[in-house]
Length: 317
Length: 317
Image (cartoon, rainbow over all chains, first blue to last red; front, side, top):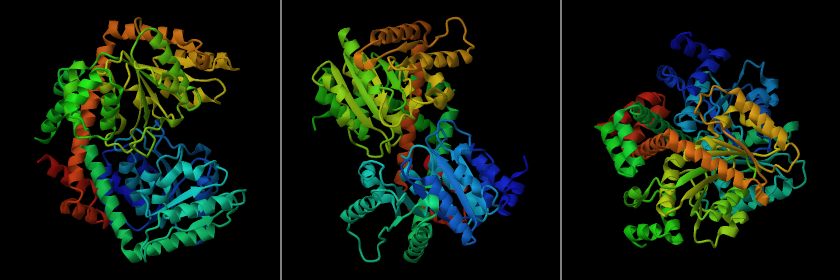
């Protein structure tokens, strides 16, 4: 492998293969990451990150692809990180089926990468920020973070983005009810996609109503807009970009952008610290001491808390 | 609340409300758990635990219910723990729709409890063993652990059980292919449910073929049987119980039962230790030091690894 400094330099120049290899290092939790992140630190915090979440079938990939096109028309360099937190099969890009992204595959100003995080030490909280740092360092102006697979990780993905877009579609059954209050809290911008279908207005109305219910907003608070799109035909996508840019402006003006990024950095540092502590515990796994403790617990001679106390004492002494 | 000693005593006598309240303590990660687990430790390790996993639609609930009936006919006290690792809404039993379990609701020798673990500090690895200890302490002879919701946590649920049952059904599309090798590794017993449907034989054959492919078994190794059931009519369920008891016998004879329980105890102790360490980090969250580190990381002045190093140093000094 090329040495880390060279890879980072190539990624900084926007070379796709170098970017891909660095993200693979993240996915594999490679020891070289320390050096990579140290080298990238000065170039972080430039990209605007947008998270896209929603149940399967609402058109996440199509919307992501349409957003890529829209931002490309604005001359922006765009990164797409498709995160699969549910796949137990790590190490693999699972985007074979993501034909919708194919149209951007040859655009040198678009970086598309998928990442499996399930089974990953520390999971999404650990891996996603580092993958974002790579794309950020590669000069992306905008990074779209999308979940693939089952749509239950809204909250975690949203936590990684400056702006969270929640997608809905009409005719998805009792979509909003099922998702309940959870999605209302995380959405900065809501999209009713497939807006040419029956029920789109009803979905938007219901959503509007639910957003209003939680109303205890103060002047200057952000009021999440609802944008109707038909992403497959590109309709409404310019309006979506407009809503995103408006939110970005609000974030910057109010200081919320810095606050969010600081919170994310704290979580990232915590996740890495926790992974390090977990690794230390892992080092003890073959250890006679942990094995003996486990034997006592299995035999009912010791309760698991008392055993954990001894383990922690050993780690932190 | 009744004091912990009284609750544990009542649970030991098999009083359902006491059992339910103890499991709620687990779900809430209540501080009283330390005392509860210490009191239960001498009574643990008696129950035989069976994990049931499979994609939505294969008939997990129906199969679980049929197994409850079968074990009740054998005079066993049965616990059912339905784990929902995917629900972001913690603290709630989500079994309103589990009508199939209703027939057992009034049986004093059956304990049914659901538990949401998503968002739980430490997740399933932390919570499930402790809920199992409660049911074990309540004198359950058999405990069935079932996942509800999306079926992607096979591996984690299987890790909690003495015997792992993987359920499939014909006509679930490319069920086996999609699940790939993952399910082959964790299944001790395979069930093709809805065996009265077209394609049941083909599913069983395909499964048999795939199990054979991985063949590098030695004499004395366990060869996972494939049982066909129509759980909704109770067909094949006695055969399933027979297969389970056979596996249980194999586990005991080979020493694998002790080995599995010891491994589980080690994981449980690790998970509790990790949660304790995470809580220590959490204590630092409002802390000026972590906030300052996060600020430096967000500003690109410090990389997250270097920041994490400082955090770990602070924790372990």
